[in-house]
Length: 103
Ligand SMILES: [Zn+2]
Image 1 (cartoon, rainbow, N blue to C red):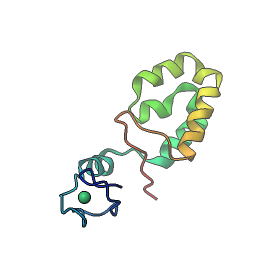
Image 2 (cartoon, rainbow, N blue to C red):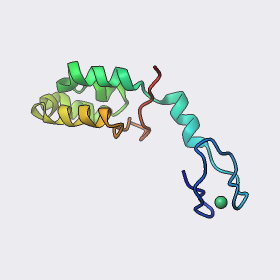
Image 3 (cartoon, rainbow, N blue to C red):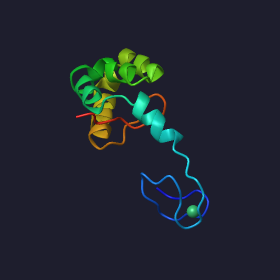
Image 4 (cartoon, rainbow, N blue to C red):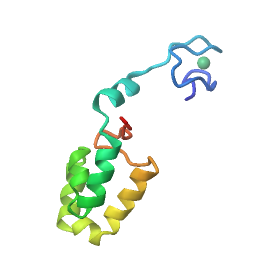
């Protein structure tokens, strides 16, 4: 990630920027850990029940889930796109957080 103050690239685990000394905000990381949805569960739900939008309900995107339920996952295409996005780690849950691989 990058320091919001000086733009210097810093470690993901850094709590302070070594270049300018500003404290780095970590709120998003905490939310991600406590509320992030399981990557594998979402992937499996999308694979087996994606045409019903179940993975969207699970990940908190209820509105999109209803839309996918009514359109049968956009005739399967929408569900397929979501499946690929989950595989590529591009999928975001209802809060805009990435999925978490809990292994
Ligand atoms: Zn800095």
